[in-house]
Image (cartoon, rainbow, N blue to C red; front, side, top):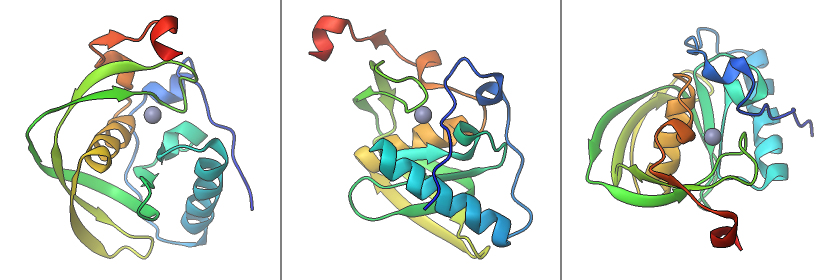
Length: 154
Ligand code: ZN
């Protein structure tokens, strides 16, 4: 069990574009394992590698149906729109309303480099869209329509 520090959105690392993963080796597996521990401890639904200071195209998510590891992800298709309330582990205590695709068709590689394609909807689509944005240095606050006020968060 090893957790890593989650950077906040003031950190310049979170605004950079991540590089593809080329080696599917023990170093990657250690990163994935540490990210899983970090996500669990933070009680979040998704975490991208740049949030723990690693500029590689990796994110993990767990919206309650098990852990999903996505390496070098590509969104092949987006369908529909959902109006979401969203936050980010790198922006603690801040939430806003945002539009995300209702359905996302995602291609990625697993920890051994094997390609897979999955179709996600609802919270999973929102999460994949949010985490995929992190890999291009895009934070939810740059897309948010309206930040919730402290009163609305109660
Ligand atoms: Zn985030």
